[in-house]
Structures are given as C-alpha cells and as structure tokens.
Length: 243
Image (cartoon, rainbow, N blue to C red):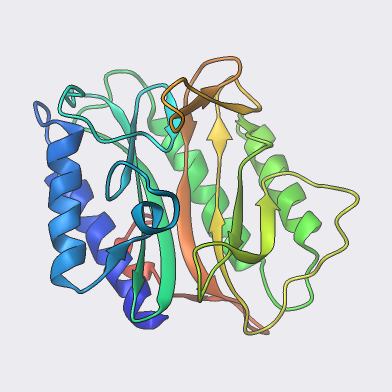
C-alpha cells in the first residue's frame, strides 16, 4: 500500500508541476501515463471502468471525472483538478488535488484553500471508533463556516485490493442513518468536495464528466490513509497537496 500510495502521489505532484497554459489536458494526461507506467503502475479508472484516459483532469466548472482531450487547452487562472488512482502489484491507491494554474485571476484561491484546510482537519479527526457520519458533519460544518457548500452525492471510499471497497460513501455531510465507525488498520481514500453554489454533481452527456446542479465551481483534495488509534498514516503524503 505504501508503494502504490507513493506512486500515485508522485504522479499527481509531478503532473501539477508540469501543467502550463497552452497545454492540452491530453498532453498532461500523457505525461501522467508515462509517470505511472515507468513505476509499473496501471491507471485505476482505465482498468476498472474503461475510462478514456489515464487520469481524470477537470477544468473550470467541471467538478470531477473530466476526460483528457486534445481540444481542452489550459489557460492562465484555470481552476484545475487532477485525480490519480492506480494499481501496483495488486494494491490500489487514490489521490487528487485542485489548484490554480498561474495567477489567480478568477479568485478561486479561497475555495482551494478551504478544501485543503477541511481535508487537513478531517484527517486529524479520523481514528478507529469514530463515527463516519460525525466526520461528514465536521466537513460540512467547516465548509459552511467558510461560506461554501458540500457536494452530497460524492464521497470517499475504502481502498486496498480494489479501487472501491467498504466502507463506501464516506460523505461530506452527516447521514443520520449511518451508524458505521472507522475501523483501526482499515485503509480509506478520504476526499473533500467543496463547492461555491451547488450541492449535487450531475453527469454530462459524455457519460463521465460531472458538473454542479446549480453551476459554480468545486475544489477537491484527497489522500489515501491508514486508520489508527491516533492520527492516520497518510500513504499519499508525497503529493504535497496540503502544502
């Protein structure tokens, strides 16, 4: 798990550095594909779902699952989300991060920073025995404090021997019917979905890309972690998304 965690974290960090205005998202994805292949890792969305790309790259008002394309050209000030998940030697890890390309000419930085702060605080509060719904409540409360909303139909998930395992639907809000608790030594991909206007993500006609039900923008940050009795072990810390 540490090996695959480091592989996806390295790919995400280097792709984030590599992104430049004038570059297509396909070119950025091709770079990510090479990074993963050189490490012996295989794209999780491609393997699992037949996704038409090695990584998900969402730009502007796209929330997640953006398809890499030669037609989509990155521009100064774009809000970009890269999500990299992969399999290596039978184990899987997942991570992602939103960032501003170049100067923040569209004022997205506050949203990005909120998402980072909420992920950091969330991870600091996860340990064995803590109710999953209480962590969702914490995420939504922190978002509201900052003037933002959470996306209610996207969530984190267990991960390890496959991309999605139990516990699934680690939501960014409190589900009062969810009595599950985090288990010590379990591995989960924990992620934020912090939005300006929308509370649900809806799929576009391409069958993959998701946008907000009321428009606006969303920031996502994600780590794969091991739950312990104290603070979790972050397997994807090398992605530097919380720096």
